[in-house]
Length: 262
Image 1: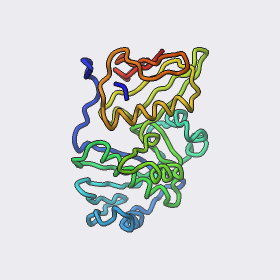
Image 2: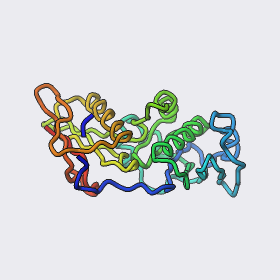
Image 3: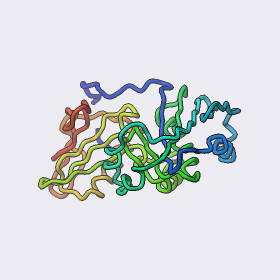
Image 4: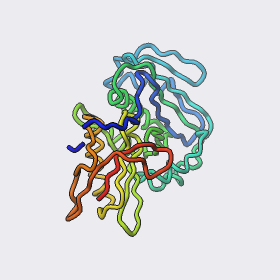
């Protein structure tokens, strides 16, 4: 789509088998982990599950070469989630719905030798299968620093996670900010695939159109990891030419990003 291999090399290196994790937020403290795991066996990936090992409120099993751990914690999530609530554009009332959640469930994969896309796809299918359990009121996807409604997570997994398509909106948060110069967008989540995050700065495009464009760019980056040439044209919005370069983030603590601006 757009993007000679950059001299700047600050994109994160993903270590094989490192943990990938998501959380279910609950309306009640307790969650029947063992029973929910047994229900997973009825699903298409069920035959790949090994025997389970249950200890306290945690159930562990192999799914292929992944060690899956599902654990119930009967308290609120320990970190402040106000920023993810505010950043979750697909769940605008997240703070109201989730602010008083009473417990959470962690779903963790470790050890798997698959690439990040394969591993995130496995995690997504597991979370989608558990998201319909009674008492689940939200999904916290820390890689994207976002929360999502369970019904949206389930539907988007079913409709977009295929051999040829990825659920980009579940994996990559796209927060838009508006000012007099136009709209800006920053992604969170591409680093989890060993890619630079994207930042689009001050363009005269509506948020929906901007997200649609970045959705395509993020999909291309994850699947193909094409190189970025400094100042290359990536899109035209009316008479404006959008160009991309590797530059420091406009935000603190994000390192180098693919910055797109006119």
